[in-house]
Length: 242
Image (cartoon, rainbow, N blue to C red; front, side, top):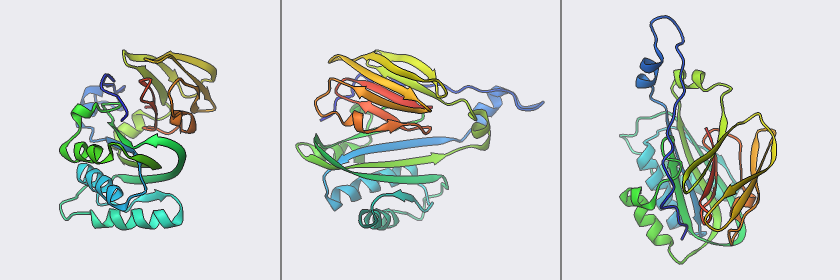
């Protein structure tokens, strides 16, 4: 299973006064922006997929129709399972995005959970349903990379964050570097528990060039949109767009 126990929590929100009578503090206090994401390294098992979508839906409580980025067949399954899990008490209208990608690597099944405050949850912070799901995945292999993402952005927060995106790079000791998304670097070396993970940032996209982790799944993902992450969990190195 992936080990993320010592990832530190990341928090921060920059703000400015927009007009007379609206201070930065008031805008932040009234902000209702939310973000929640689950990355699942899952076996091709509909029951497990159902459990993840159910746990995700119960957490975000969105009644919106999802955006699904996947092959047609698996996309139809995701759409059906999503609609099965919409409850009458779901009231949020933020954006729900599902992404599904087939994996060819021999990866252990697991889940990575994060939000706008915690870059990556420690398993100790999982709620009951995610904890049970992770237990179901023990000793299984992953066939799919499944991402469930929820964004519910306050209009003030959207204005405040315009053109201010940056990459936040972390290891087990905390934040290593913050880099503006418009900068380009070919080799960024980050110390991890097993050695150095080397990143590149070019044209607003972060990628992993090399890492000492066994499976190397981090080398097949990228981060460019707000909230997207690259997690090298064995080496405890994380890249997030904020």
